[in-house]
Length: 121
Image 1 (cartoon, rainbow, N blue to C red):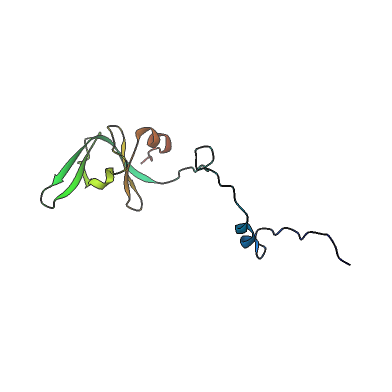
Image 2 (cartoon, rainbow, N blue to C red):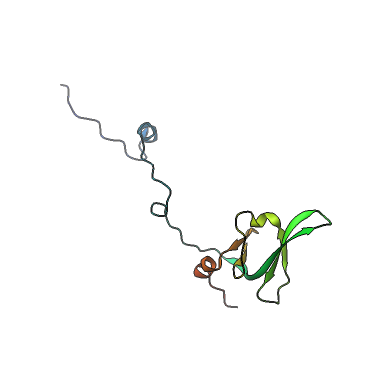
């Protein structure tokens, strides 16, 4: 005896679910501050507050470099490749940041100070 029942929809994890979902048109959300997920930082970094920077050319190797001077005068200036300022050029008060994996970058002062606190010795 024939029935008019529809098959139950497949659930995630059921065989064929991914293929069935890929055939349905999907509504994609724009990637905006209102729609993207939030993440909380829990990284451990080393950082120094920047007093000033100078772009320089190391004539011996013809390599463009940036010299970073720090607010705390106990630290010698850091000399790093010029490509570090390709996405962001720091200003006085920003931070030079070294991550545990060796990656170096700059962080605007407000973002850094709201996300990190110095470890007590």
